[in-house]
Image (tube, rainbow, N blue to C red; front, side, top):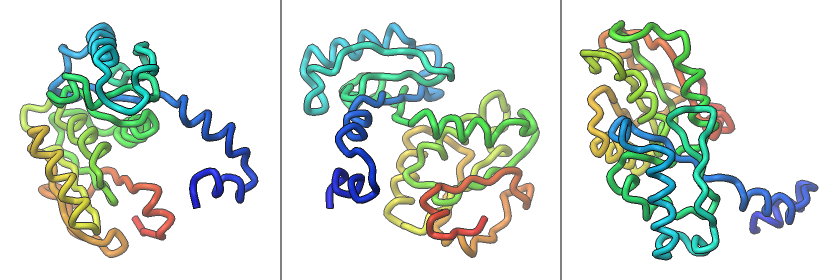
Length: 213
């Protein structure tokens, strides 16, 4: 069954829901590689050029080129059909795709955490594909002379999905990430150095599978 059939079965107006989904902005996050380089104006110029060249997603030629600010200074909103993959800043890993809700989850998770350089450890269960994991790692390392003492441990039961996380970590040059293949329902490895985790995150899909934290 397709999305429309599922929505109809749930008693939801499928057409209006899918239309609303089609107009939902695409959010991008500025990574530590892009700080001081990626701005609203620079993204606007990149998107305009990409759309004019017709690169990227099907239908992107009519997507518009308006980039807007968000409540978070490291996130920008692009049109729903924006060809993010065709943007130079994306190719240079200065921006990554991450929805605003995930960004909020990370910020709430880390609020009131002891500031750098105090050591801390965060646990991220069901960490793949790694968008929040990378954001957590970058936030922990910011301002710390010894990023390796402020760590995030990512756990996922899928070796393939964990491989995607590993590639993301390598590409971003992060040194405060530990990846472990394991089942979140029985994961009990201690945090590095501190032995106890300061914070824990679990993906909602794992909650549906009754993963215990």
